[in-house]
Image (cartoon, rainbow, N blue to C red; front, side, top):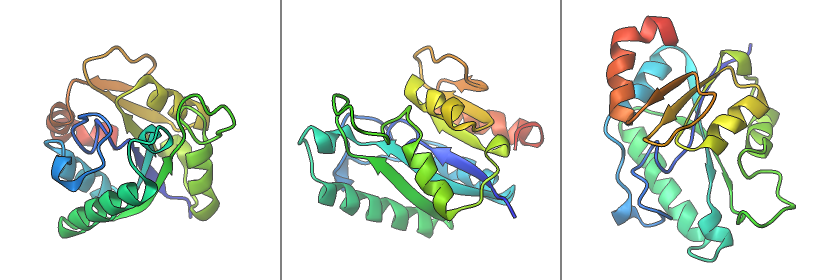
Length: 177
């Protein structure tokens, strides 16, 4: 059976993006993210994180730093009864042209699909950059939500904040998920 999935960018969607977040004490969950994830879970979606982490490739922090923060984040989700099926990340800097995983390339989604049967047409991606929405289109993910103030083209829905999306979803979830 194919599952529906919600693919999430990390910085700017799951947590407030202060720039190259890799320390637990600098990680702040966005307001409304837990409630949004519960709505998707209750509607039968599997959750996946797909995140560019160029700070690794740029030498700002190590993969060990990334894994330490990721393990902590996943345990925080578990305390809220939220299971993330997988976290895929691209450690490459933008100038590393041999990379097939940096968004908007589909490498992270392709890797998830190797282990999971997912109906991409029925799935969603939430991101805060054009590369996130472009990834969804490149991977044939059916629906997208853009978060933030910047203009992002071709998103199914756009909201200034995760909290704004949560409020919309509470009223309109039967129309969306």
